Image (cartoon, rainbow, N blue to C red):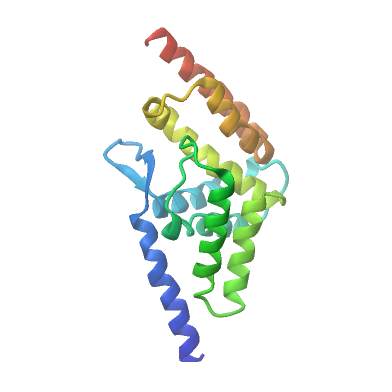
Length: 197
């Protein structure tokens, strides 16, 4: 093993430590604080290991876990773009693509290109693995909102229709059974909010 290769790998690992400082809007389930992007990525990896039987088609859990561990690394450079934040999708995509090139470029080859390729595959959402990974990336924050009595939905004045349109298509595409369960929980949540109970 050459020392230069190890130095590049360690440089990347030091750089991604910064993901722990990127605070998301979603709270922890105990509501003690907001989660960070590193915690979110780790939690999604666990979702992939445990829930892959609900993917719309057979998936490679190892590849899904890889995508989920890599998908938000770009937030080191650009921060988190909350789903209810109203940011420009095109601007976000451009900023994140630049960040991906920089961050994965810290790695030696072929690792750098492999990680960049996995990140791009996730972003495109065209493979079964990517569709399932993207579904989980919407499923987890949806559950947080359900389990915290509305969480970011309440904070941002999000309606039932917005939840159905922002989460539904992505979850449905990658994990239809999970969306069936989610839709029931979401409708129940908003019905309870409307009735004041």
